[in-house]
Image 1 (cartoon, rainbow, N blue to C red):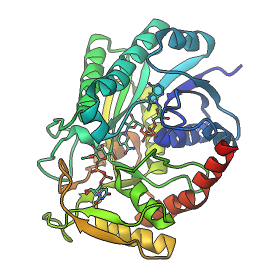
Image 2: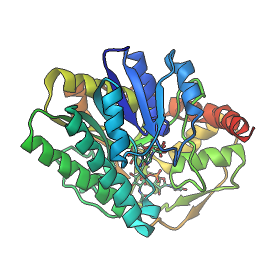
Image 3: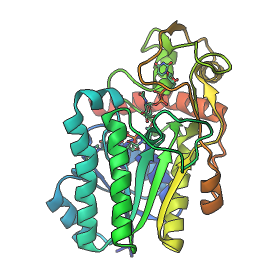
Length: 344
Ligand code: NAD
Ligand code: UD1
């Protein structure tokens, strides 16, 4: 039996699955807990190929205290990476109770089980959404925080809870990683983002237009005060993001404490930049029309990632072109294969 394992909640999801690959490449043994509400079990087969060994996989819910106690009793878990949660902003406005339950209660149950098991190393998926409408860019970690919807508020609440826990029990080692806009996929095309229903986020929508699932992209506003009038974001390749998690875990193991860092590239690209780069990747035109602004959107948001570079020695290296070509490879092959397999 292995000497220690990382528990990855939400490990069959988009970011969690890429983190599993990066963790395995860094030599970690993995235990995945996922209730499959937004992912498929066959991701584990793909992870087996990418990781070289099959991660342990338990179908279960992070709100299930008894199941968590059993996991901590049965496996030598040394740290937890917590990706499990709900993430659609619009749904969170319609179903706040479900969102607070999955995100806030889920995290509380997990933290309580960790304390019962005396496992105190925790890496949390926070988001640039905690900066609300940023007063200026690039956004630093000490920028004011606010929430504009229940999803964002659930992240803010959890960040505060983690702060309180660390203050009360300084032997906890906690990372709050604030992701900017994760896109792309593993270059193998075996894992990637597979949203259910109509995608809310730009890149999965562009990819679905590119494969022909959707007719055209609505560009939400071209009258922002940005170079081409469309919204500007800090898109980060999901593999760079995954590597940031390994660097954060390594930092916590060496230094301990409460770590709060932005994981972004430090560069902003517009909606039309993304469309053009995706067109180059897929080799054909992506039809779009300009529509009115989406409620709640900010004109521009990109990270100051220098703190992560300084503390973790980590930096996002992959280009916009790689983000689009890797996403395109996944959308062309991986998802179809996934569906064919699960339909059989
Ligand atoms: P995802 O939906 O692909 O992955 C989340 C996984 O958690 C899914 O596999 C789902 O089945 C599982 N899950 C959900 N609730 C669960 C529960 N109660 N118990 C067990 N498993 C559960 O989402 P993702 O994009 O990989 O996001 C991972 C984390 O990163 C989330 O916390 C999200 O809020 C955060 N985040 C995501 C983004 C983004 O743009 N994708 C940006 C910032 C932060
Ligand atoms: C959105 C969420 C944010 C969440 C993040 C996760 C909102 C208001 N914000 O952020 O809370 O943390 O996703 O990644 O939902 N766009 C289009 N057409 C589309 C989709 C998007 O033009 O069909 C534009 C948007 O107006 C924006 C850019 O593309 O300018 C990026 O949008 P999106 O991918 O949804 O990310 P965020 O708005 O940054």
